[in-house]
Length: 284
Figure 1 (spheres, one colour):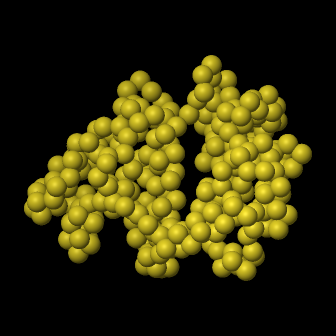
Figure 2: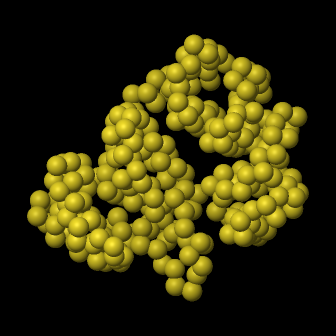
């Protein structure tokens, strides 16, 4: 993820990459909140003994790992960090390595050589998000925040203000909306921007999850939800929607949709959703 965002920065600019990073940090924060800050599955070094690796995999590895590397880059400076990366790739080309091997290498060739102060033990082997980490900001998201506050207060969002919005800005906007607005507010958004019929899966999932949690789903876009869950099999999109249904007392609906859709899912996705919908206590 770190390298992917460096590539995005090179292709589209720092602001674009920072929007991706901030969305990723939001995802990480939500995952840690869902699991609980002391859950061992929020560690970078996972304990998978006697476990199916799929049970422990989540976006912590991607986003907490990214945050660690970004933090190291900021502490070292990009010139020094890129020199470390080049040496790392040359040294371990066409090899795999353990967490402990990486820890030893990064200490020797970056942290100790530059006297960087960072609690690497906490980053790698403790759950949650360390207090000292890179602070990610986005000017474009700040402007979206202004529009979100205006919409929450007045129920107004002009198309002229959103014409140039990217997928990232729409995701950030939807994530800022509370679940207790009057139904008419969600209606206005849906009628003007056709969010329930969006062809962008990222935007559609964010909107459908908000619809579920705000009780907007019934009599508005339940059919779109069912169509999506039946025709899309990517676990990244399925899990938040089924989880939202479970957490809003729509478990019967969730199980009915799953019964129709499960044969279209990859076996790993099907097992994950089945476990989620049949767990005795709320599952992650």
